[in-house]
Structures are given as structure tokens and as C-alpha cells.
Length: 287
Image (tube, rainbow, N blue to C red; front, top):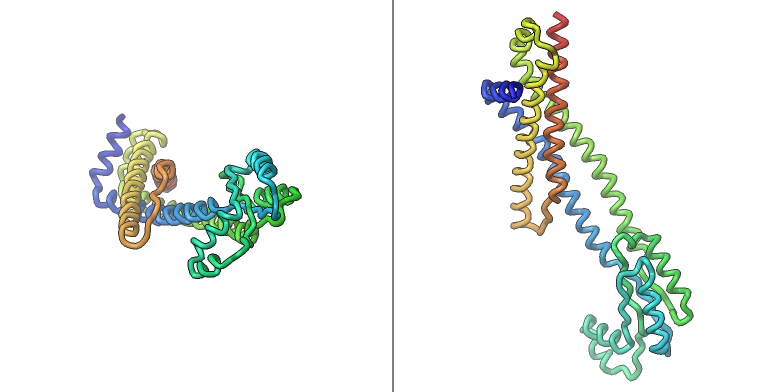
């Protein structure tokens, strides 16, 4: 309790320096927040594209309804499959005429329906990797009445390549920004510690232990880091709200990310304060 009171007094004694520290921490974490917001929305977009991955199996002419019914049940039992939709020849022609309106006259003049019946197969979440899609396609090719299987292999490969690239970039850039934030926090907290070096020297003179001296500074670092995290969160939300209302629709950060970000801010403040006060104690002891 005394350490908490000392930390609060330290902040009150130097409000300008504390404000500068909070601002420095907030701006550095704001960069991380903006990157996290961008990375999250890129991932959301890729997930949306990935959700449209499906396998289409075209059936041979004359496949009986009994065979179609039995095969539908079997395909629905595949562990990767979420839903199977059978499209008859009539439905295929109707869908084509509705979607390709510029060819409506051509479709209406047809004497024989040239479009095949097909299965449109939607895959489960977590089962849309190129390997999963290829595995389902190979099983479908095993049916004698399946004439052709399509799923846009190159397109699926590109989607997952983009996800891998985005994940690697997120890890690399996020780590770089975090390192920059640690450096800025360390500088800000060191300034606060240097401003109170006389106080530290007096405490050492009267016999205070190093842990006793560090404690208020660690709490002050925690409070400063948390305040900087809240500032960064507020700035990130303002940018998110402005872009979402004027330019394009965005998804806000998940609650877990926000909680982890605030915890990270507090921990960074504690670590930076601990390093700064330890260095100052050693400098004073050297004299």
C-alpha cells in the first residue's frame, strides 16, 4: 500500500514528465494498435474469401436419381464436407440464364439442355486447405458417374499463400513495432527515474533496500504503461471509427486482443521501469 502511495505521489510531483511518458507509450503502442487493426481486417477478408471455397463435381448424362441420392449421403459423410447441394440440369440452365442475362435469347432458343447436373460441395471450417480440397476432389473422381471435378486449384493455393504471407508479415512487423515501443517506454521511464535520482540516493543513504526502492517505480511503470495502453486504444478506435464511417467497413479488434494489448502495455511499463531504476541504482552505487 505504501509503495502504491509513493508511486501516486511520484506521478503527482512530476505531472508533465508523467504526461510525456504516457504520451510516448501511447503513441508507440498506437502504432502497434494500427498494425493490429490492419492485420485483423486483412485476415477477416481472407477468411471471407476462404469461406467461398467449394468443390463442384459434374455428373455424366443419364445418371439416375437413385445413384444421385445414395452418392449424396456418402459425400455428406466425408469429414471435410459441410453441405452438399445437388443441381439438376434444369436448375443449372435456369441459374445460367439468370446470371448471364446477355445470353438469355440463346438459352431460350435451346432445344436440348447442354448443361450437366452437378454437386456443389461446401467444406467445413478448418478443412479448406489445398490438401483438404484436393483430397475431397480425388474421392469424387472415384465415382464412375462423375465426369469432371473443379475447384480452382490455383485460386485456392493463392488464397492460402496470401494467408501465410500475411501471417509472416504480421509476426515480423509486429515484433519490430513492439521493440520500438519498448525502446520508447524505456527512454520515457528513464527520464522519470533520472528526475528522481536525488530521492533514490537519499533512500539508499538511510538504508533502504534495492527492492524497496524499486517497488514504487515498478508500480509507477505499470500505471504509466496501462495509461499509455488506454490512450493507444482510444486513438486506434478514433481512427477505426473515422475510416469505418467514411471510407470502408472495418471490423473492430477482438476483445481478447484488446485485453492482451492492455496487459502487454502494463508489462512493458513494469519491465522498462525495472531496467531504468536498476541502471540508476548501479550508477549511484558506483559513486
